[in-house]
Length: 345
Image 1 (cartoon, one colour):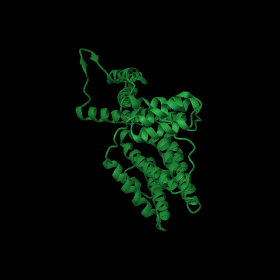
Image 2 (image 1 turned 60 degrees about the vertical axis):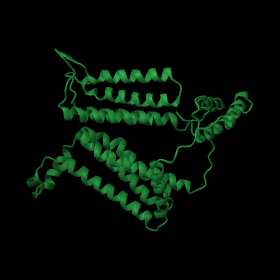
Image 3 (image 1 turned 30 degrees about the vertical axis):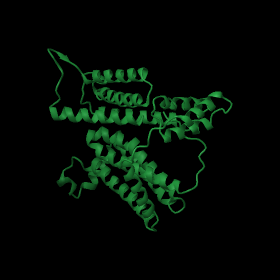
Image 4 (image 1 turned 90 degrees about the vertical axis):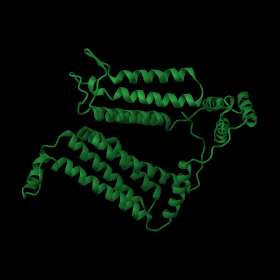
């Protein structure tokens, strides 16, 4: 699902950049226009054919990427199909595309989080993963995962003993040498444990998120109140009156952007208050503030600024990735009891 979403987002961005650079060419002629939505449908059809025709994990990988590119190519033309004049440049279209991706992400998370799996489901996933034995593509990590699934399956089922025996005698794929990404990740982990031991580290985290909140406030304030006024009016002594007049005439999008910023700020202040008591709890609140920015604030930013809002989105995603890494390291430093491995999908 991650590959699907990444491929879909990348395809939308690539199409928009390509069309902008080439002057929005049209395929067809003599009154015909072959919209790239059709190419998206063909790619989604190809992903379905791959899933129905092949069993190995490589097929799942190709289907996810092909289907993601196809869906992104399809949804990019949503503006044409929600307007009577088939307006590809319909202003809310970019925001609608973004909301679609957010809803897909939330739907996937709701499916995969908080589920209680039965013994039959663990056995079914073990059987599915054990297909790699037949293809001579099973590595040690996959073998350990299948063994964990089998431990949570019904021990009286004869398939459990049979799969365990097959895993013990099956040849494993030799481990791949550590990649550049893996080495960089281990180096980053060691650096984090080193820095996190200093007394000033929590204050650095707090200062970063408060600073980020202040910058966001200034940005929202400028976008809502000062864009379009001009320097003469901004520097005028009557600027306070103009701001008050602007407050009265704020649109729904402006108010929504302000409210989402306030929600994000509340999460930051909760994190600051909890930093002394629990570093993990504070980081979780900081993470919630970024989620509010991604799920709410960015929706209205895309509505108003179109694709120029991508810079803020990439910045928020980068912060979210760092927070995910830091929270994982903080939890790894404490003893945890893991009752079941996650089922892959």
